[in-house]
Length: 381
Ligand code: GLA
Image (cartoon, rainbow, N blue to C red; front, side, top):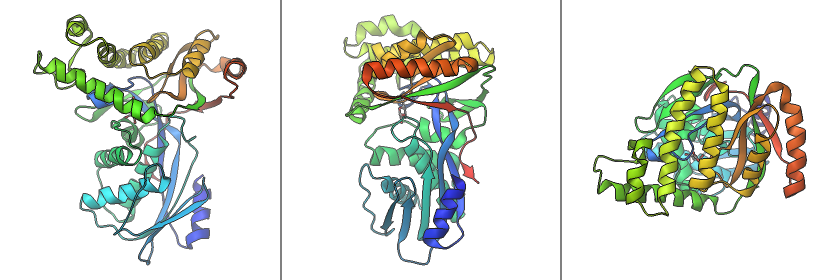
């Protein structure tokens, strides 16, 4: 992809660009916990977005998206980003950097990626991160990585309308080959944890569904957590977010929260516990335990947090009854996207054949399979 992006840049703009790469991410465990200042366990992957960028002497910026074969121009002084358009993430990052006091000048940019859009691998976070890093390098701004992650999170909130947490851009920036990041979303600091997979691998099954209203459902889940916190603070003033509660508190908070809210709070609290258990299990090279935790996470997301969907539940059940699978769960925001499966290398082809047949029979959709390797974070290449 790097050479295609450079070729395309030379063809469109006839100058020498600098090139950056920002990866997508998977999340091993810890779903819907980041916006409650909880713990997540993501990893950058080798799929991602390349951006080629160079200064121009015009009074506007020109951008081109290789995957869509679309061009777009805008003036830095009068940008009007629209929700849902790829160029909005570029203008969004420019606007956020401007606001933060960085004086941008006009540039040309080409982007190209190999992350399937809508699969829940955070292509939009990767785009924002790539643009932010590209601009930082081009104008020698030396923007700290953590700040870039915060700007990219803001861009997603503004231009996708999703009130998301910090996990996706953070993983894209800080990823390390063969490691996951135990990220504390309160202090916004992480610990790198080696992921010893041995004869096992992570295989994603893309359900190819992306249910409408997923962004409003995401925002509702976040609001439900905030409502629980507001109620609980009357009794426990020291509770700032659900992150401050443990599994041992569940029976007392069940008495205080309405039936509609308790299961959602329970998910966040138990999921944070599973992040710590999974970290220990990886450190002890106990992949069987990791598999059990993935299954438990899926059940909690399905039954308590209610962000799964029939397609993902079906895939999880099929995966669970397939030889060589240690565990599987829906990944990301939910309502579609990918199932993350931990399975034995030698069982991958039988797994693919079986899942494809069962899924096609049931939903008349052909799933995609994506083998992921854990890679390094965003960088100039
Ligand atoms: C999306 C958001 C993240 C996180 C996950 C759920 O990927 O962008 O911030 O909340 O959903 O864990």
